Amino acid sequence: MGKDVIVACDFSSKEQVMSFLDRFDGCVRKPFVKIGMELFYAEGPGIVRDIKSRGHKIFLDLKLHDIPNTVKKAMSVLSGLDVDMCNLHAAGTKAMMTAALEGLTRPDGTRPILIAVTMLTSTDQRAMEEDLLIKEDIADVVMHYARNAKECGLDGVVCSPLEAQKVHAACGNEFLTVTPGVRFADSDKGDQKRVMTPEEAKKIGSDYIVVGRPITAAADPVAAYERCVREFVG
Ligand code: C5P
Image (cartoon, rainbow, N blue to C red; front, top):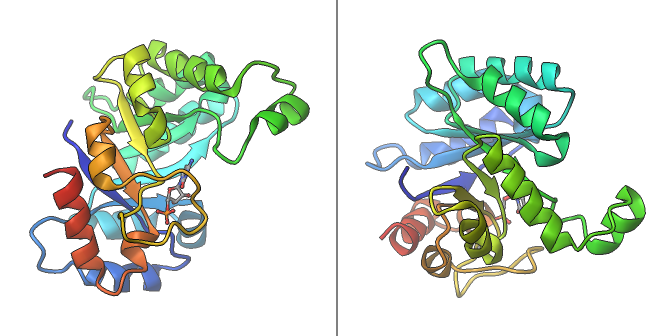
């Protein structure tokens, strides 16, 4: 699986996302597109088919977390939608992750890439201890969840670029790290606190970078995407 730049299309309507993607008409390299909850819940599964039919790969970022049987059935539906990558919460347990993989696997043995979310970056040590009653160090929890995902046969985790090396050291270089929090050296950080440039993310071994506003809010999104690809993929 090659390195790639995934563009977080955090738009709220089909109209907005399509007018953004129109800019890439005629480009040889079509961006790998991340569709999040907002767009998916607003537009339904048709949005996946519409974007796929324009030649884009899709990372459907719905972060499933439910009882194993429900997740298995939901994953089977996502697999039928022909997404290229999807995800779930590792906190849903190993039983849930194993069931998810079963649901995702098509009769011919193929399946989309399945990635686990470890601990959300919006959850800090205090919230984990006080709200979730998990007393361990958050970095250990993240690595434990990553190892659980690996043991269940998942393909990788979403993590900060700063954690990618540790994840690879614990789970192997084949285990994918999908990393948001990427900014160009000369661009605004926005609400992201700990960021890396595409070039730095490449050096520390990220497999996929997820980039939103530095591309979607750029004056020239195609040029920003191509710069990201140049810096990250080479
Ligand atoms: O616009 P920006 O580049 O910050 O977008 C990053 C994307 O990655 C968003 O879709 C955001 O929800 C997602 N993400 C993140 N941090 C995480 C997990 C996902 O920024 N820990």
